[in-house]
Image 1 (cartoon, rainbow, N blue to C red):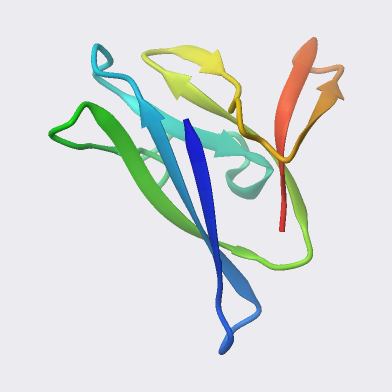
Image 2 (image 1 turned 180 degrees about the vertical axis):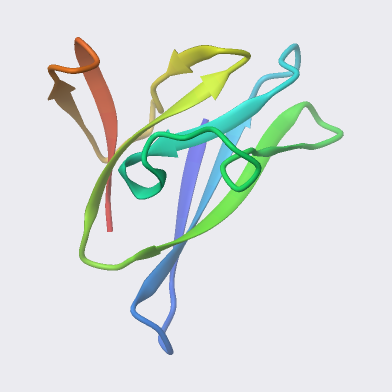
Length: 99
C-alpha cells in the first residue's frame, strides 16, 4: 500500500493518491472523515492491469483525516499512514492522513 501527496501551489489543496495492491479483490474504496465514511463511486479506486487499485482525491491542506480502505467489504488500514488514531466507534485504530 502507498500514499503519495502532491501539494498544489495555486490552491489550498493536496492531491492524495492511494495505491492498494489487491490482485484478488474485485472492489476497493477509500473512506474516511473526508467523505463521511461512505463507499461510493467517488471513493472507489480503479483496478489497474498490474492488480493494484489506485485513485486520487483532492483534500484541504493543513488538515488531518482518519481513513481506511474497504477491500471486498473488509476494512483495512494503510500500512504507510502518517499515524494511527484510536476510534471508539470503530473499536480499533484508523489510519490518519496529515496534510
